[in-house]
Structures are given as C-alpha cells and as structure tokens.
Image 1 (cartoon, rainbow, N blue to C red):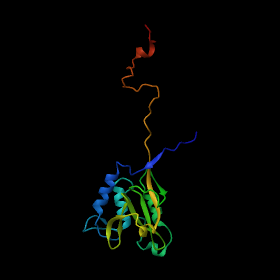
Image 2: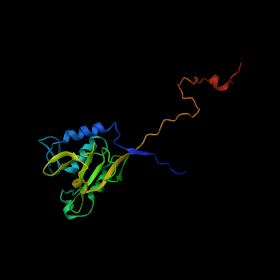
Image 3: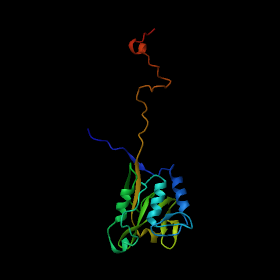
Image 4: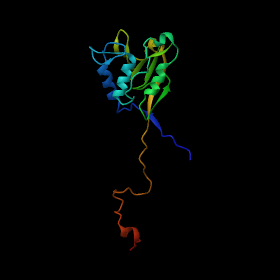
Length: 198
C-alpha cells in the first residue's frame, strides 16, 4: 500500500508569530560580534548565530553548534553554499525546509539568503509587514524594509520552515462518539440482547 504524505503548512502560523517578533525584539540593537550569541547592548552576535538563536527559541531549529570550520569570510574565497547545508541540517525534527520564490509572497519566519562575495553567506529573517531582521557588520541587529530594491538584488534564495499539518477532525462518519449525547453506555446485556420495538 502506498504511503500517504501528510499535508504541510508553514511552521510560523499566526499563533506562533508573536513569539517570533518578541524574540527578534529581544535581540534588536545587539552589536555585531563574530562567533558570539549574547543579546543586549553589552553582548554581541553575528548573522547566523542571531537567526539560530531566534529560531531555536521558537522551537523551529535544533539547539546545535555551527558547522566545524565556520568562517564569516567563507563567501569571499569559496562559492560552496555551506549556509544552505547548515540550514537544512539545523531544522528541528519533524520539520522541513523548502525553497520559496524570493520575490514572491514572503511570510513571517521566512529566511533570506544574501550574497556576500561569491555565494550566499548572510542570513535575514522576515518578521512581517514587509520587514526583515538580521545582524549586519557595523550595525548589529537591525530591522528594516525587506522590499528595498538594493537589498532584494542581493537575495539569492528564500526558504520556509514547514511542519506536517494536524489531521482534521473526523465528522459525519455515522458512528456515535463514545461519551456523546447520542451514544448509549455499553453493558454486557446491551451487546447480547436485540432491541425490541414497541
């Protein structure tokens, strides 16, 4: 028998988006500092650690360390997209990362891979209302317009975290649900004796 795949939906449903925005707000204003993940004006964070911290706080990524040999200058001397590989490996169990059109309808939680040098080696996170957040060298964690033409020209791809949608409730099956007003308590006698009509 062929397996039936469940329907998928974006992980950041409307119910989860307030937590996403709250996590971004907690990091906004944090200075840029390589290989660090400490929120606040006295802390520091780089782009990948910022994205990882926000997504991990929201349960969308596994809490794991960055790949061995990770370098902020990787994009300046290699065209190998290590960032995409890490994103796919970091997604929490039960979730999946799918590519979406970067110029399409982006939703909160979508990830934007930005070209720096020869490949995509910078990450931004859509927060909704046409805004995105990222940790920029020299500026720290900032939130700005994601639809600015100069910014969009550097977007190489967009990705969305998806989860299996819960199955809909079964209705109209014709069978009474145990404990409902239409069901009768089952006893040994009721199973054995036929109903007698008047």
